Image 1 (cartoon, rainbow, N blue to C red):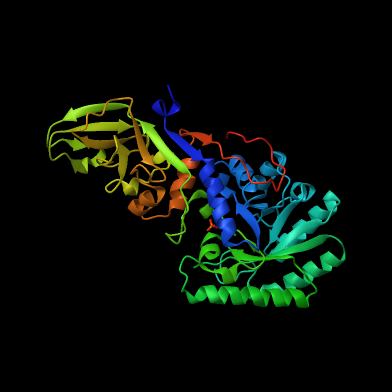
Image 2: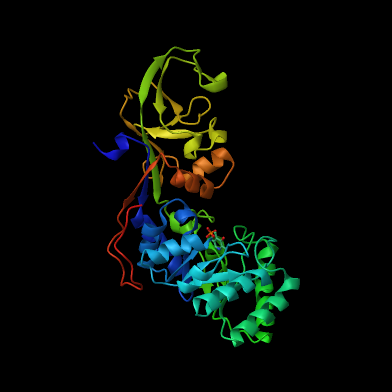
Length: 390
Ligand SMILES: *Cc1c(COP(=O)(O)O)cnc(C)c1O
């Protein structure tokens, strides 16, 4: 009996990750390519995804936290890895000792990273992070000159090496938005200030998936795609493919007459005699409860509506007169080839992004995760360990 008949299954098609990587790589052929594998590769498994992307065009990795970066380094991945989101008083010593690049958004971070470099006995590789218009992470323009000056002094002392200069765009999924032009100009201005301070960062970078696809002028020296690797397509026409398929077995079925209320609050009542199928998946597994009234799942080749409000652990599907039986498998989402909903459909039904659907389901502890292998690699750019199942 295959796994999918026994429990909810989040299947990751690494061939799709590989194809997405190659497609994105081709759209930014002259740049360094940092594959973003934060949040356990958006729920897809950081290590198998990292091993795949490094064989199909990525030459480095990006994570939010140092812990995520160290997991990859300790698994044997020997490429540059950048971590960009850490508290200023973190102990960065293990990161520096393991050659993890660190984004530095302010002088407090810089102080901690310099202390770690002294403790580790080697210079820290840093990317100065400028806020180019999102008011989120990165140094504000008025703090930037001082940050560059201090970093230059530490570089002269051999404590740090400023290898990069980064920003992030807030509206790159809207190609015509004037903030994109301003963000590019802000990075150019930040670069000029850094150069005046004596810094010569090798990598300037701004573009995540949307900017990579929409705005070649934003590519600078390095691109930083995450979402696109997993098939999330902010342009809707890039030809990316979702890598994840979520399925669940039908636990039980029941035939009910017209007028039967279903689920908590009786938000749904059957209009005709019908068959109801129960799936062991709910909002504790990351399915958005707010999608209940619109959600569909694929059973026996057709999209069928969720009946009533999905609960913490389970949801009911109205399968009509289809002779569905317990033990059959429903596809909750997938790439869409067989008519199943996609993560983008679930996101629309819930009023959110496919990112949130995928990270939630991929992290769900009760959902088993399985990786399908990626195809024969292009000539390897990096040493990677054998593919691992997470
Ligand atoms: C998440 C993230 C990325 C990747 O963004 P996508 O839109 O998923 O491609 C790149 N850079 C930073 C700083 C991020 O936080």
